[in-house]
Image 1 (cartoon, rainbow, N blue to C red):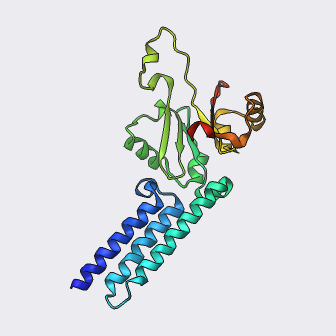
Image 2: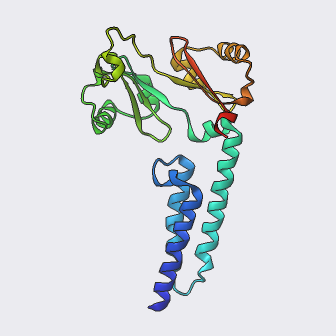
Image 3: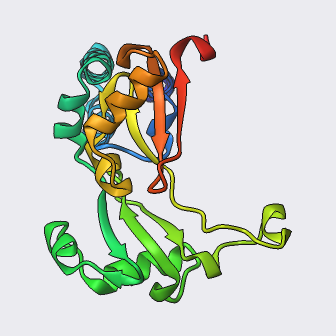
Length: 225
């Protein structure tokens, strides 16, 4: 009995360390690679508990290997955004101007009922209130409300408030974000022209956002050092 208790405590501590090493996102929104590792970790951790005669290293060693592979994959995906998009996929627009996009839902193998259920969980009961709805790479739904349905801000108390277009990410770590470009109607050439005018090279940019009105914001890497 004491052996089982000791094994349980060791495996519990090992899993806690493993989850901490893999980062806080493991506890929230899981990407495909993270979900696979998390499932495997739970299965491997049970082996030494179910088989008291098996060496404790038969559980700890595979966990350490999986954590190492996950950390390696995370580093590779940071250096190769295109590979990251292949593995995690791209966000998909499923609602435009209050109307579901049937072709996008079919590509995601979602029904309209699935979409409506997801919106209700976010507190939106009328799909026509939504200007743009996006299914993120982690499967969650993000929404941008129509102008008349957006929460009031201090700026809205001014006599005239122009429409607020959605801001989209068009460049991250020097790499173009094709999804963001298509969402705000920008062409890659326009991004390069803006960077040239600002005298900034793509590799110096940590984040660049833009909207359909042509406004943009550039955050350089050195600004966050």
